[in-house]
Structure formats: structure tokens, C-alpha cells
Length: 197
Image (cartoon, rainbow, N blue to C red; front, side):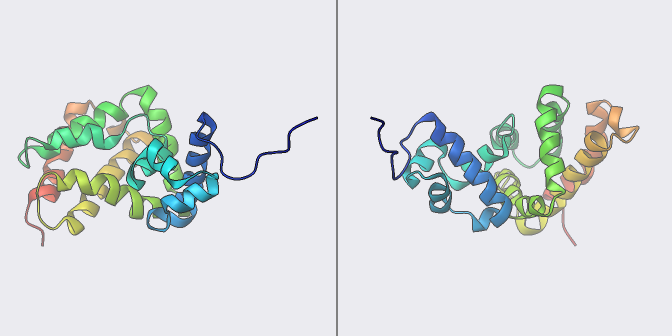
């Protein structure tokens, strides 16, 4: 005689992680970062909210995991900010280019960028990516007026991604990394630390 199907919340097995990530991706895409809650993701995945925290930590950590990035950008960029504001743009660009110029890392990143072009992706950048990744990275510099600086920095970095990696516009697409740093760093440094109008 076969057992009756189990009811209630799913036990904390490996399938639970996949279910949590699937529920989180759907929630972040439809409700944005601010509209997504750990409790809501847990409910959609049929697990206890404590299990979401156990596997993924904070909502910001869950957001990064749901993006399926090859690396956690915070882990790469925050150490580059530790020396302080002077030269921060050059350090940020070198880290950024080292990841994007790696063909293995670039493929999932390109998929993410193409998803940003969708209406739900735009909300994820505004409500999730900027406050979860860019804000804390720039905040580590101790600069003022983050509300204005974060979008300015993002405009340069997103523009660089689109032109160099998505559209592959020459000569930027094949420009050596040090040349890219030399061209972009002064503007980026001004957005990071310079006086704003």
C-alpha cells in the first residue's frame, strides 16, 4: 500500500534551495526588491522562513544568489574600496574589467544585462542592484551625497557594459583594459568624490 502524499512545508533538503531560488527570482522580477519579503519567498517555496535565512542569509544575499552571478560583486568590489577615495575609480574599474573580460564569467553576466532590458529587470536595477550592491560599495568610501552619486556611477558602468560587451562597439570593444581605465577613471572619480553641481 502506498503512503499518502506528505502535506505541509517541505523539509530542508537540497530541493528546498532550488525552490527558494525559483520563488525568489519570480518575486524579485514581479514585485521588485522592495516588494519581496523573506516570508513571501518562503511561502511560495513551501518552506519555513528560517530555512531561507539559513541558506541565504539576508534579503540582499538572497537577491545576489537569485541573480546567479558567477561572483558576488560585493566580495570583489568592497576590498577595492578599502584604501579610500583617492584612486577608487581606477581600482573599481580594474576589478570590473577583470571580471567582464573573463569569457567564462561574461556569459552569465550578459544574460543578466539582457534581462535588465525587460520591464521587470529595470525595477530590479533601481530597487535591488543599486541599493544592494552599488550603494554599499560606494558607501564604503565614506563619500557624501550617495543618493546622487550612485546613479551617476551606475550610468557610466552600465554604459560601459552595453557599449563594450553587449553591442561590442569598436574601438571600445577591443580596447586594452588599461586604456579603458585611463579613459573612464577621471569621469568616474569625479562622480565618486568630486563636487556635484
